[in-house]
Image (cartoon, rainbow over all chains, first blue to last red; front, side, top):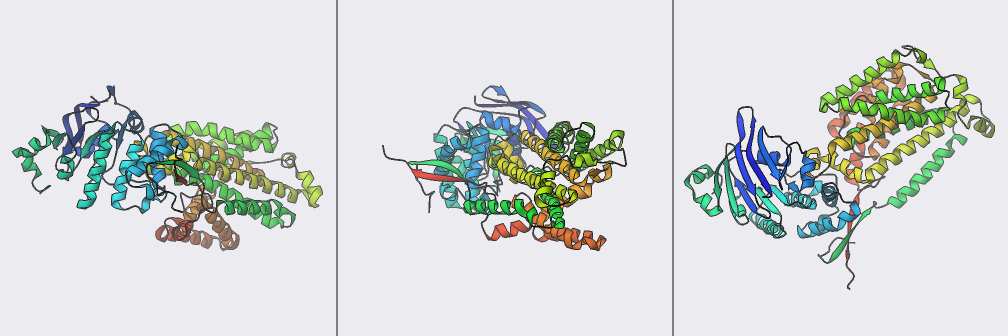
Length: 238
Length: 358
């Protein structure tokens, strides 16, 4: 297994956001996570990314226990994430945003990193915007930058947090095509999304969370057909 | 012109320089030359004023690196100004060293003091960090007030033997036909200019280096920087220690020129931190140009309004608040928004080139 989460527990006061959670991802697998707001989806990413420490349980990446490893150590180990609300370095250029990931996430020199950053920008359709400040990007471009910056760290696991939210249908289609391209390079993907049809176009397996608990897991179509999942999902996705 | 419209068959390289940077370089060289030769024609008042301007600007650059880039809002940098000043007095009066040697040594010792200080204050976050640094500075002040050989609570003065032992004074006296106090000021002026240029160069080189990339990222979003592999703690510690060293050297220079130090003056939060914050904020925090503009404005206000006493401080505070409310990026921010200019280019550009056919 690439990622192995076992017995994970976390709560904020009386709100339980991870309740004895288990989750495994194989190398180059794509797994989707759905669940209502407050189900603990983003918290799970923060726990895997190292921004939060779990109250109990283990997170192993390529067999290594990540307990006590800070976010920068997890990035260097091969875990990269995007944020639900894009967090670009606004005064740095788009290219410099990637350079941070390549130089610090992969321990490369700026000179060595330029080639791979250029190729990633090209692949994600941001090359024309390479030398403008990231603060001047549109929402779609910011979402692409989140992905490009994560890819610059050469991850083996990519965590996508509601990357399709807030985009038009056409933009969403483009994004799905890009994510499928990323998959082809062998990067495993764990993707939280409310836009279920985008998710279903990419993933191999679907996990449903509610109140920090895994209530369903399996092949996407089968999971979506379950009545209890359907009930939770009424009102979120038409 | 469109040097980035390339396909996958292109190779990419990095170029670190800004448009018009050659013109800027020429302007900097001319300005430096004029400033170096200024004592030949300028009066003593102007020279003294410029020494003040230079060291305030150097302090502002240090604080800007600390607060504007590394996000360390310290209100305790007076700890290192006073420490540097006292180290100069200790090294020259008690240690018998030449002042010119004591200045860099004061910087090294200030860095050594900064390391354990950081271990204490780095446990605090945000507003608590700010207050913590202030408390540490107070501890420094009270500690130096206990040291009897350095005058205890009332402070002490440099002996004329020390102040006139700075190399070059006799030479300036003979060359420019001036008296000893004026010659001392001129030599101090050159040291201040050298220290300012060294500070600007150091900050600029840090920002252009690998570490500068991390600092830009930390400035814009700390958590995102960490999730891309930046070790925030290490970068911040390095910046804290480096700025302590620079601030200590500037403090040593300030008190070489003043020739008298006391705990209350050396560790004064108003002089060495509040004014410095004012300079950085009105000029534009998180840019190298901002403190330059801010220092010039502060100097002009000090020069022409200081006679109004309390009204001067009220005006200073009002200006600070107005800028924070209506131009939070500072006066340089207003300029930079309208025109894409920079005096200190640090931007890394991606250049795409067609691969030669093989």
